[in-house]
Image 1 (tube, rainbow, N blue to C red):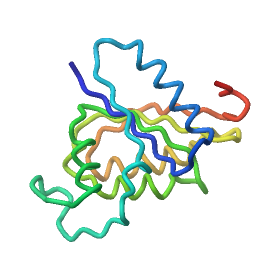
Image 2 (image 1 turned 90 degrees about the horizontal axis):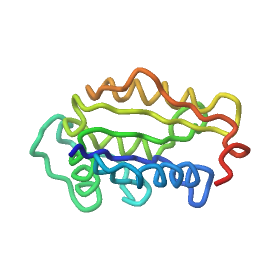
Image 3 (image 1 turned 90 degrees about the vertical axis):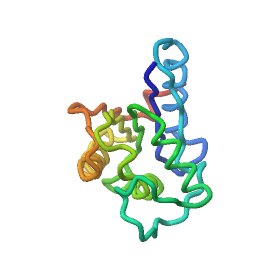
Length: 156
């Protein structure tokens, strides 16, 4: 059974993104042929990345929450990343979480779902995220899902 990690990349609590994630949790509860785990980057309380060991070293050891984050991400066979758009990019907490990753996501598929309260739907965040994923040799799926005007559309 494939393991899918749904990674939510916002630092905000009780915001629009939480409603988007809750929608995906409802959908995930109906899926029986995959193990789906939800990871919220802010819950790991990661320090700013400053590790000296190269990211592609499989036996590198981190400490505390950083090691738990890397292990939880590594455990999945593929990913769905849900991200808002902050200033035409992804939130800092998501960027910091991705900075900890290397070989753990190499060659694994990633689906991106972006959202915003405007008409763009987080397209700039998705573009920035694709560039980062390519750098890590993850397989960003070719079509991103952008949800625009989420304040009006996601009244869950």
